[in-house]
Amino acid sequence: MTPDYLWLKWLHIISATVLFGTGFGTAFYKWTVDRRGDVRAIAVVMERVVLADWIFTTPAAVIQPVTGIWLASIAGYSLTEGWVPWSLILYAIAAMCWLPVVYLQIRMRDMARVCIARGSPLPPRYHEYARIWFWLGMPAFSALIVVYYLMVFRPTL
Image (tube, rainbow, N blue to C red; front, side, top):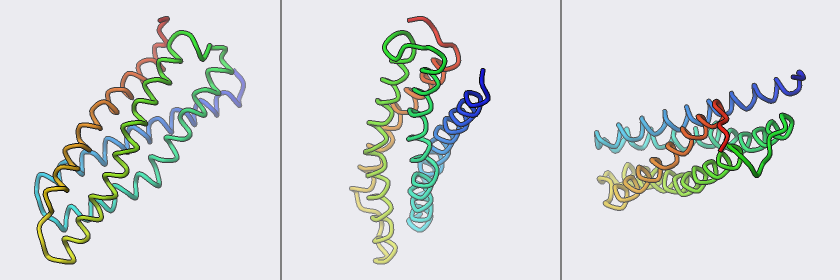
């Protein structure tokens, strides 16, 4: 393989790691802090979750399909046959789950800010958003796990 291909592959692997790792890490911290119910702690974690999404997840989410399609093309894989289209479909499913999650995270962050300013508990809507956020994360993470499998094993489908 050419040096350009190897750099592209490196970027693809790093961005996949950042995408999955940041998503899993922020999900863990958000889920655990929500269990405590401490509005101040929730506000701090939600600030960081939203920030991490903008700094790490968003760029990685953009880099992934660009580098993935480019790598598949260079390596001679068809974008319409085998494991590549399945990877793209699953990635799209993860993205369709992630976009509303970003909105929900911003709304939950804002609710926590208001509650701190007012000295009030989180409203029921926060907990409703948190449940939706959690259930959207399940298919997103599952889809990305399968995409990892497809990238590594490249099965003939």
